Length: 409
Image 1: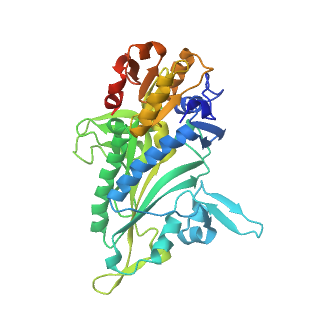
Image 2: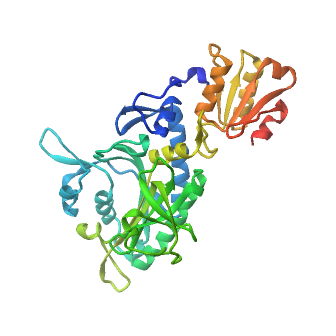
C-alpha cells in the first residue's frame, strides 16, 4: 500500500478528552476513529491488525475442531424469554419495529446457537460438536470508557461446544485452555496473560478468565507466587490458597480480561429441549461450554502493553505490515525495492509522499509502529545500501540492497 493513497492521516495530538493510551495512539495513528463513546470505526490500518488477530484465533479454533458459522445479531424476543434473560439481563439492547415486534441486539449467542444445534443434533454420534463465529455484539455499557477496551458495539469470537457427558466437556475445556494460551502467545501478550479462576458456571466450581496485566486494566487479580495461576477479586475472599498448587502467597496486579471460558452445563440447552439419544436409546440433555474473545479489546490490550513515548510497537504477528518503506525524495531505487518486497510476499507500507519532510515521515513510522523501517535515500543508494531499523530497537544499520529481503525474512 502506498501511504500517499491512504485516505487516513496521522494526528500530532491526541483527541481532547481521550484518556486511555490505546485510544490515543490508535486514533493518532489512523487505526480507528471514534464515532461515540463505546463505538469505533475500524480504519484500513486497524482492519489489517484486526484481520491478523482474527486469523490467529481462527487457526486455533479450527485446531480444536471448531466449525465456523455466522449468526444474526438481530434476535427474536421469544428466544430470550425462553431462557428468562429478556427481563434479567441488564445490558441487553431491545428494539421495536414498525409492527411493534420486539427484538434483541445480541450481546451473546446462546439463545441462537442452542435452537440451531437442536435442528441438527439427534444422537450421541453427533457429539462432540463445536461451532464458532466472529460477530458484532451489542451491550448497553453504562461505563463505555478505556478506549476500545470497553465498548457498546464490538467484534467477538464466540465458540460453543456441545457434549454428551460432563467428562467429555471437561476434556474439551482443557483443549480450549491450551488454544487460548496459544492465541495470546501468538498475539504477543502471552507473558503478561494469566489463566485466572473466576466464579463457576452451572456444573463447575470455577470458570476461567484470561487476564492480562496492565495499568489500563479495571480488574484486580491475585497471581500465585508459585505457579503463576491467578484468582480474580470476586472469589479471592472465598479461598485462602491457589486452586492449582495450594500455595498461600499471591501478588496483586491490575489487569484487563481478554478472554473467558465457561462450562454451561444444561443452562441453555434445557430451555430449548436440546437433547440427543445416548447409547442406551435414552433421551439426555446436551451439555454445553462457551468460549469468548473480544477482538477490539485484544487489539487495545496489545497497544497498552507494546508502545513507547513515540507510538505503537506492533508484534510482528499482528502488525498491519511487516515493513515501513520510507523514500526520502523521489528515487527509482525506492520504487524498485517496493516491487522486490512485494514479489517476495513481504507486506509493505510504502511512504512515497513527496510533500512530507523526513522528520515527519520518521515520526509517523514510530507512531504507526510497523516492525521494520527501511529508509531509502540518494545517499544510501550511492553506497549500495539502505538504512534498516527495527521498531523496538534504538539503533539502525546499513544493509546492502541485495541482502535486504534475507534480513527481513
